[in-house]
Length: 196
Ligand SMILES: C[S@@+](CC[C@H](N)C(=O)[O-])C[C@H]1O[C@@H](n2cnc3c(N)ncnc32)[C@H](O)[C@@H]1O
Image 1 (cartoon, rainbow, N blue to C red):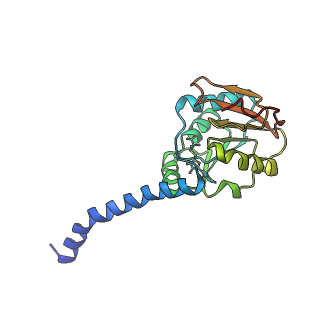
Image 2 (spheres, rainbow, N blue to C red):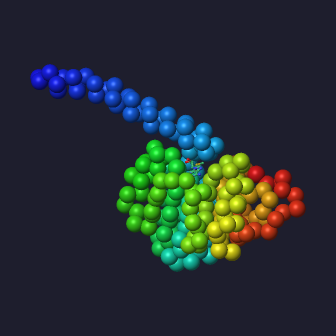
Image 3 (tube, rainbow, N blue to C red):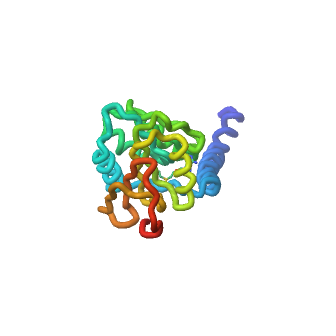
């Protein structure tokens, strides 16, 4: 065998290991930056979100934003449940983003972009979904206050907007999987501690 090819062959396992390590490291780095781990929603949690959006009467062809779309599980559940809707996922972490791009490659009603959803203009949103963390919720509320058309349905999975009035909720999979529907900007609550 040509010596150059032998060198390439010998280096391949090390190069593959380096790439995998860097991708894993990128997950940790982005989790540190955002404070949100890339957990996937379960099928049952996805059903809860879909059921709440159906209850909100999502219009034909609606634009739905999935903030922090991770590995794509919720985007896929939404795209299947609302085939005429446009599902826009925004994800900052590269590995989950590219995996979700691969998973949704044959779904024409899904558009994924990599970036920070705090830079998003949500004025064309007819619904918003998110599954984030307690400490992110106040900043998300500010983003929604700034950019959403009043009355837009927002469904938050697992972590709720503690200071806002919930219009409906589903807790079929226990407290962790509980989903809450709000019509934004939802009225402020008197006692913010009674929700997940
Ligand atoms: C708990 S996961 C939820 C994934 C997905 N929504 C689901 O239900 O399967 C939250 C995701 O939000 C992403 N995220 C957190 N902050 C973000 C930001 N500012 N911009 C874009 N993505 C963000 C994280 O990288 C993570 O993948």
